[in-house]
Length: 189
Image (cartoon, rainbow, N blue to C red; front, side, top):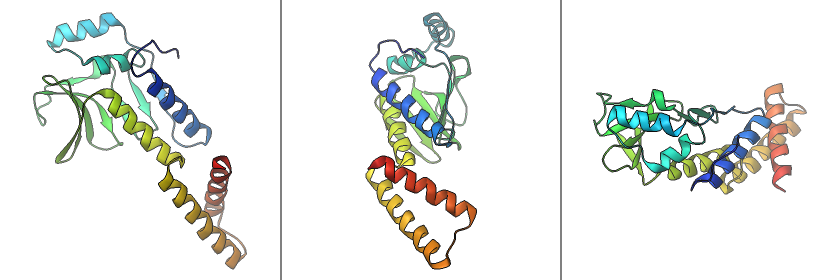
């Protein structure tokens, strides 16, 4: 899918690449719908009397609805965005779900900031680019491309190898996990 020039183009490209790597490793799949049109965004704004923040418009110009990393985030298309949902502040427009659970991704009608609602707390972001960057960090962690996950990978390999060496074998699921961690370690080297 070709991205229009915008301020989040590099981040979108990195996110797409990370999602592709997850799929190649038979992890979670991602789906990015075709973009929305300028007319659809203007019509939504006119109908609802709300201005969509420019940083989110840039995302919608790339994808009008998406599933990212299977469970990391689900972003709604322009026609599915929720306005005036009673259990939350009237100021917030729901544009997606976070983490596969009941957490909502929203933008403020008044401040144009973004919020992830986690049960009783809010995590605020200045722009949608910050949410994309958070998704990138999460997926890198899942793929083992951050320092913490490299340490975890090394510990898991050591633990499974010790178990295999002491027993002379590993159950099938543990053997597959060991093979996956060893493959990940080789890619990192």
